[in-house]
Length: 258
Length: 302
Length: 67
Image (cartoon, rainbow over all chains, first blue to last red; front, side):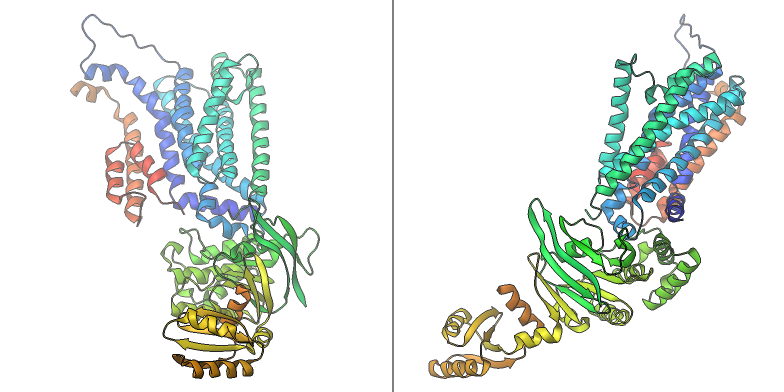
């Protein structure tokens, strides 16, 4: 009941500051940009003057799987950046401005406070991601060929886990740091560091959350769910849960008036 | 009946105590003023009582509190500069606050309506808080602090940022609230404390230097105040006065030399004698009951 | 250019343009309602209008005052 109050407040806030409108729109644009521009690439090249004489330009015929990966790679770069920027002040900003003082002086459980923020943010991100992928799926089916509903929903599920991880990481730094900019910096830095570490030690870190995209591609190519994908998904969920618990404890031990 | 017991409360920042081994009780139904100069530790103290800061040492307990109770349930708190969600309306914020304190939505709405009327911002209930003036925010702040009917209301400098009219109205409001709950409010303006409080806690450099009811404090300190007014050379006169036998202490404030003595009547005679013999350029001579200011200055100077 | 325009299936492109337009519009309406932005208000107008897609996003993330 207290949790619902906090959660509803977050959703109303997202609605009033238009996050609930613009984030889905931006995610849709990110998702359909590549499918459309790649499809029209020959015409675009033609229109800007064509290729020099003698040069030939063979555009590969993209498969639906490849195109869906283009959309995902947009989410992995710009998409993640925007998600981090959107979430950087969700707790840090409230503490900095002093609003949290009036909220937390009520008998609010710190667990409720953190998880309500987390859930509201995650819902916002998931809705945006889902709508974006839906639009991408629509274009892929028209322009490149069939991508089955099964594949589509598995992509949503597994890539959704990656976004959940990003959101949780941001909440984690939010619970520690009061400056929004630093929260964003540390979140991005951690994701980048994890990617490097995952690549260097790939033989040990097979189930690092950063590998989710790779296994999703493998899933699309082999048309089956690789066991590594399941393993990585489980690891991602475990890390997320741990981060959340640690966030709550960090926040509890903080002096809230400072 | 004792409502709240504070024992040996200490708060240190980098080993420097902001609050140093403070102990006191608050009696139920009283309005207590926490007074002290800026930097005395008033805000730190209130934040500890409100559960926003953790004390380095010491305890805060409510008399009928269970072992695991969350202290915040019993407390309403208004910070010195309350900040709200500017996108919410005043009404929405009160309902939100109420629900956070486990009041049902229906009840919270009902109380929000009542409180908005009580604090006098009912007409602005559906306006965004972003458009509220400072005084309106202060009223909304009081309303959110009492929506869950706390046993103890903590107000941090509730009137110091307001204009004279707003200050008057908030003081009246505090006087009215006094009927229903225990109030502890901090201020550095002594006349405000004088006006609405029953009891005082004098905080100086992190320690309670004096406490008690207003009349008791007056009684304790009143016998001994003589005020002399001079145009200049106050320092010179102060040293002269200090040499008199019955004078115990003195301090200068503007053109006023305030003197405390063991025995006022003999001090009066000694001063007037000296003034006549040495031809002091005395502008006025007043035998005064100690004002809160005098008590305060005396206590702080010791 | 003529050929490019003819060869494009507008039924496919229109949704893309419409979404961009909505994004621009939402940002502009919000901008107009906002009393104060972080940084000069007129500057945000140009950013929203002239920087495609990114402009409105920048405005929503950095232009609006948080509280």
